[in-house]
Amino acid sequence: MGEVGHLEAGTPFDEDLEANPGQLTALLDQGATFEGKLTFEGTVRIGGVFKGEIFTKDTLVINPEAKVEAQIEADIVIISGHVVGSVFARRRVIMHPPAIFRGSVTSPSLRIDEGVMFEGASYMPKP
Image (cartoon, rainbow, N blue to C red; front, side, top):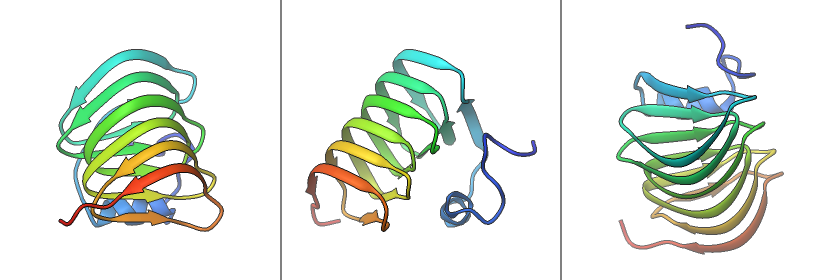
């Protein structure tokens, strides 16, 4: 499939996905805009603009150039873009710079790397 967006081998995204292997199911790449409800299985990467709701039992990756305004429910959420909304993750949420997050996160595991802007609340229920 080659390069996806501006990601290269060895980026934090690839390391996170190696821990959770799976086929890339869909890609909303830079330059694309979508508004509505997205439900999927597998791994989806968003690099464009998304507004609405996202539901999955799998992995959502939000690329650095993405702008997302959504209510998100997933197993694993990896954020490097701009996200406004609420995130509920059954396993974990990982935020890499240059992520900007405004909203609430509910997850048993939350990792916010140095350089991420986090404005909101986090709730960490027992796994």
